[in-house]
Every structure is written in C-alpha cells, then in structure tokens.
Image (cartoon, rainbow, N blue to C red; front, side, top):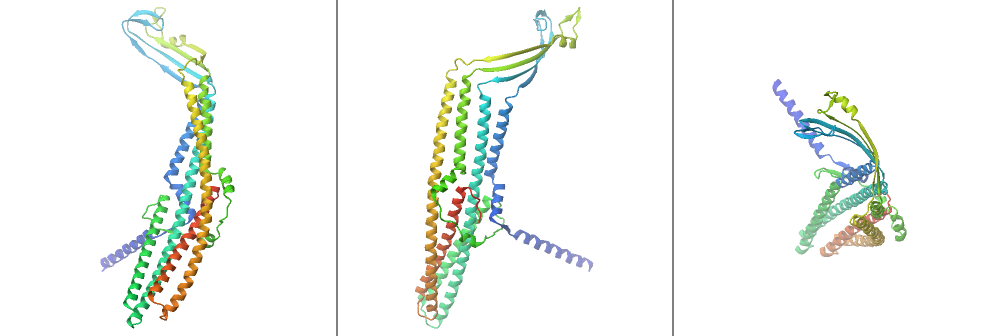
Length: 450
C-alpha cells in the first residue's frame, strides 16, 4: 500500500513537472518595438563586425602614436672559432679554438621624417572616425529595418484579423443561404456561390497568416533570435499611428540630413583621410634624421692578462664601449617611387571627392523621392479610406436587402468581396503612411519610435 502510494505521488509530481515545462516552452516572449531595436543592436552580427573594425583601427592609431617613442633592443652573438682566426677581442691572429661573444644594447629615435609620423597619426584618427561613422550607419540601417519589419508584423496582424472577420461573415452568409435553399427561396447556383465565397475567405486567411509568420521570422532574424522562439509583438497605441506628420519640404529635409546622414559623413571622412594621405606620401621627399645610441662589450677566452686568463667580468668591464650619433638620409633618386606614390594619393583623393559628391546627390534624390512617396501614400490612404467607407455602407444596405430576399447571392457576394478588398487596401495604406513617415525621420536623424 505504501509502495502504491509512493508510485502515485511520484507519477503526480512527474506529471506536474511535465506540465510546468510545457507551459514554459509555450510561454510567449513579449516584444515591444524598443525591445526589438535593443535586441537587434545588441546581438546583430553585422554591428559586431563593424565594432571589431573600430577596435582594430583604434589599435592602429595607438601604434602610430607609439612610433614617436625611441626603440630599445639588445643582441648577443656567442661564437666558437676553430683553426686560424682572429680573436675579435684583441684583433690578433690565433691558431686555436676560441670562444667569445659580444653584446650590444641600442636605441634610436626619429627626429625628423618629413612629418610622416605626425600626418600618419592624423590619418589614423580620421580612419577611426570613418569606422565609427560606418558603425553608426550599420546601426541606423538596422533600426530602420527593424521598425519596418515591426510595422509589417502589425499590418499583417490586422490583415489576419480582417480575414477572420470576413470568414465569419462568409459563414453566416453560407448558413442563411443553406436555410433559404432548403425552403426553396434560393437556387443551387446561389448555394455554390456562397461556398465559393467561403473558399475565397479561407484562402485569404491562409495567405494573411503566412504573411504574418514570414514577417515574424524576419523580425526574429534581425534580433538574432531562434526561429522556434514563440514571441508576441506588443501593439503600440493605435492613435499614434493615425497622428503622423505627412507634410515636409524636401529641401529642408535634405539640408538637415546632410549634417547627420551616415553615408554622407562617411564619404566626407574618407575624403579627408585621402587628403591626409597625400601629405604622408609627400613626406618621402624630405630627408630623415635619426638619433641613435649604443652600449656594447665583448669577451674572448683566448685573451690573456699578465700571462694568465683574462677574467670574464673583468673583460666585460674593460671592453665596455658607448656610441652616440645621428644618421641623416637624403633621398636623391628613388626611381620616381615617391612621385608615383604622391600621384596615386592625389588620384585617390579626387576619387574620394567624387564619391562624397555622389553620396550627397544620392541622398538628395532619395529624400525628394521619400517626401513624394509619403505624400502619395497619404493620398492613397485617404482614397482607400473613402473607398472602404463607401463599400461598407453599400454592403450594409445589400446585406439588409439580402436578408429579406431582395438581393441575390451574386450581388451579395460581390459586395462582400469589394468590402474585403477595400479593407485590406486601407490597412496596407495606413501602415504605408506610417512607414514612409518613419523613413523621413530616419534621414532627419530623429529617433524612430511608434
């Protein structure tokens, strides 16, 4: 009896744990727009790659600064000579095995190199700024994509709801049609038409649900989230989606965007880096001046002192030597290498100028197009809203007449189809207005929020 009771308790606990695990697995993670943006910026691999490039160029900048410091190196060369050779300690010929070594410690610092070190530091700073601007561009593009996909999810959710509502209406119509058919008020054609309307509604619902799943998958991918994760997108206040600014002056938007657009900033920074590279290349025309110093000593086991072996440490002390000097190198003829490098740097700069102007021209075109698209989408939304209201009013009238047998099923189903299409068009147009408005915010550098 105790054993049976124990088994029963064990089974109950296991079942309870199984239920808890199942509920946990099915728990939905609520995703707000801000959370989606934060997760994307934190996890996105493209952002991380851009940040690695920043870190790499930061180390390059640090090293270019360190290149101004003197270096310090030490070397030693122990040797064993056999037969007739020169004792490097006494510079005399000997005919025996000789062990010896020399040791040196040296340092040098560049006093002048045509300002190349200074200009290289400046260029590396500019390149680091370019990386930071590139990272900002990657982040901005990612945020825009996340917001766009988030809006698409909301739009698809509304389309699913609308499709389900139309499915319910079609089922009600089918029920009325069957009842009327049974009492002889409608024909087989009317019944077939109602069945066809249900099939169309089912197809619309399946398509809407597929589009919703596809947009949810895209959103998960931007957040670097497991596709199997069950998420729930939290809807913002719908009133904010209807209070959207739709009137902009394209020239004013362009003027503001020039100061913040990552593409333009990146092109200008790279142009500045190319200009600095010309100075670095011209630095090779100048002579270079290097200050150097050296400490050294040597030892030989063949060397004698007062007829006996010259002691190791005594030799090191007695042979200790120092040197201090400057090295001046004057470029006289370098096979036109410096001239070629300068010309290449100038060509690179000219290309960077063209690239910067192209970035501005493209931004101008994009902004004018974006403003026109926003105005067009607003007009389309107003038109689709009016169409929806008209079809809704028409359907209400036809539905009332259909219920009392004054309208046949063909007219009823046609009116229902028109209502469905106009509702879908209105929903799509509403979110298109929001999306186009957020694109303008993106180019203005405004935070993209819903």
